[in-house]
Length: 339
Image (cartoon, rainbow, N blue to C red; front, side, top):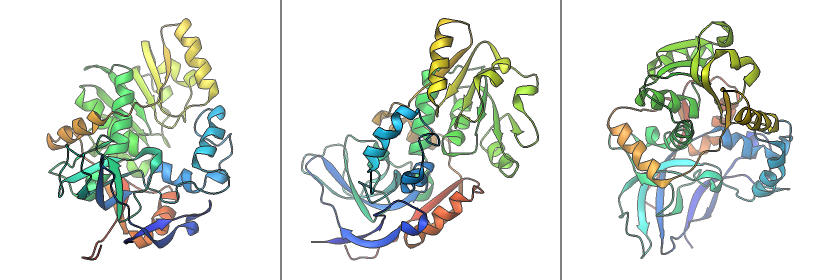
C-alpha cells in the first residue's frame, strides 16, 4: 500500500487541529485521473469547514434551514472528509483505463467543491469533473486560485445577464469571488466600481476596476451614484440601504444570503422594478475551459499574497483568519521522487 502526505483534521476547531500525516495514496478508477497536487489556496470554505462545530445557525452564511443539512454533510460530531482544500493545480500522474479527455503528464487545475481533499500530495477526480488543462501562462500557484472564484463569479454574473456598458458595483471586490468578479465584469464591458478596505485599494485597482471605494472612509450608498447591478459578495449590505443606489431596473445580487433576503427576492419579483437576486452558482465543467481561455488571453489573473509549504498549513489558516491578506494565500506541495 503506497502512502502520501496530507493535512488531516479529525475534529473541528482552531488551526491546531490540522496535522501532517501519512495516509493511503488513492488509486484512480476507470473514469478517474490521479493528480499530483502542487498548489492549493486556503479559502473561506476551508476556514468554515475546519471550524464548523462552532458555526451557529445565525453565523452560517446561508439560510438557517440549510445549516443542519450542511452540518450533516460535513459531519455532526467529527469531519466526514478529513482533508480540506477545494481547488488546486497539479499534474496528472496516472489515468483510469476509460479516460479519454486527459493524458499522463497533463498540467491541470480544478475545483472540488464540498468533496475537498486538495491538502494532500495526490487526489483522484472523475475526468468529467470540474477539471481542465492549466493555463499555459500561469504558475501552479496562480492557476490554483482561479477555479473557485472564477466559476462562482462567472455563473452569478450570467444569472443577471450582465451587459456591456452597465454600471456595476462589487461589494467585497478583493476576495476570492470578488477579485474574479471585477475582472469578469470588465471582460463583459461593464464600468466597474470595487468596494474594499484601505489596505486592498491598490489590489482592486490593479485588477482593472474603473473606480475603487474604501468602505472605511465612504458609504457607497450615500455618494449619489446609481448602478445597474450591485453584487454583494458576502451580503454585508442590505437591499433597503442599496435600493436608492440602483437604477430603475437595477439588480441587487447576493452570493451569500439569509431567509430574509429570499423573502425580499420573492417580494421584488412581484412588486417593483428593482430586483433582489439570491443565486447559487451553477458548476459546469465547460466553465473551467472558458476561464483557461480568458487567462491565456490576458483577461483575468490571480494575485498571491504569500505561500506556505504543506507542513505549515495551520500557520496559513492563522494568517487568513487575521483578515489582513491581500490576495490569495497558497499551500505549496513539494514532491520528492518517491511515490
